Length: 431
Image (cartoon, rainbow, N blue to C red; front, side, top):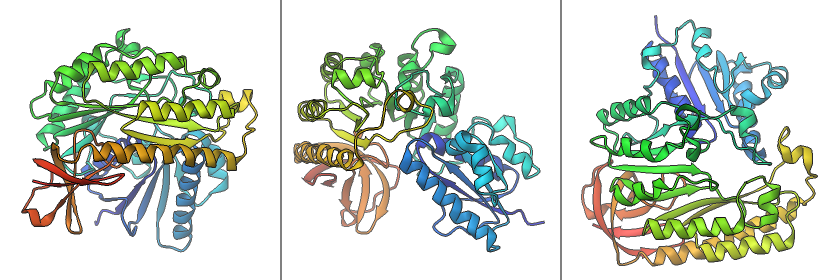
C-alpha cells in the first residue's frame, strides 16, 4: 500500500524548524514521503507549524491555516493538522473558528500527531532529524522555555519555564550531525545565557560551547538569542580562545533608556548595556554584534526614542533588527499599561531607526573592501555563488556573492576570498 505524502510548512523561528525536522524524521522512518515548505503543496496530508510571537506572525499563521483549510474543503487535501506556538496558545479558540482542521496540537505534544496517523513515536530517534537546511549547517536547540518576565513578551506564556537539555545529549546530537556532514552549528534557545541553571544550578553556556567545540569536525559555532543581564563572563574567554567559535553574538537588547528598560522589566540599565558592548569588543577583538530593538512600547517618550537613536549611532551594531510593539494578551504590559502610542508613530520610529542602521551597515560593509575572509558556500543563485563569513548567520545576515565564472565551487565547502565591492547588505568577492 502506498504511503501518503505529507507537506510540512514551518512558520516563525529556527526553534520551530527544529521541531519540524524531528517530525519529518519520525514520518520518514515509517515510510511517509515528506516535503518541507514546498513551492506548491501536493501532499495528502498537511501539517502547519505555527508562530504566535507577535501580531504579524500570528496573522501569517492564521492566513496559512485558512489557505489550507480552503484546499481541504475543495477536496485537494485529506487531512490538515496544526501545531506550534499559535496552536499552543489559542488551541480551543482555533478549533472552534477553523473546524476544517482535523486536529490542533500545541508546541510540545506534536508527537501525538503520529498516533493520529496510526504510527508510534520512536524514542530511539528523539535526537535525530531530517535537515531542511543545506546539509552543511544545522540549528541546535539547547533549551526550551524562558524564565524571564519581560513586559511585552508572550514566549513564557507559550513555552513555560526554562528547561535545559543535558550537555551529554546535546554533544551526542552534534556528533551525529557531524557524521552526516554538518560543519556549522547555530546554537539557539529562547534565552541562551540561562542555560544550565535548572539542571546544574549555574550558568553552563561557556562549558557547553567548549564541549561542542571539542567535537572533531565542528568548524563553526554561532550563538543566538542571549540576554544582557548577568551575562556569563567566561564566554568571552571561550569565544576569544576557540577558533571554531565564531566571533558573533546575537544579543537582544530591546532598548537603552532607563525609563524603558524599567518599564520593559529587563533588569539591566543603560550604563550596564553600554559597558557590556564595550566589554564584548575589548575581550573578543573583531566580534560582530547582532541585536534586536523595539519601538513603541507603552510609555516610550520622544526623549526615550532620541536616546535609542543615539545608542544605535554610538554602538554601531554590525547587524540590527527592530520591530514595533504589539500588545500581546496575558503579558505584563497588556495588563499594566495602555497601548497608547499610535501605529503611525510606531512605524515612523521604526523606519527612522532602520534608516540610521542602514547607513551604519553600509559603512561597516565598505570597511571590508580589500580584506580577505574565510567563507562557506551556501547555494548557487543566478550568476553567483552565495556564501557567508563567520560573521553572517543564515537567512538573517548579509551574504558574500562570488561570480560563477570564478570557477567550480562546492556547496558546503570553505574558501578564502578577497572582497572587492560592497553595498548596504552584501559583499562581492573573488577567490
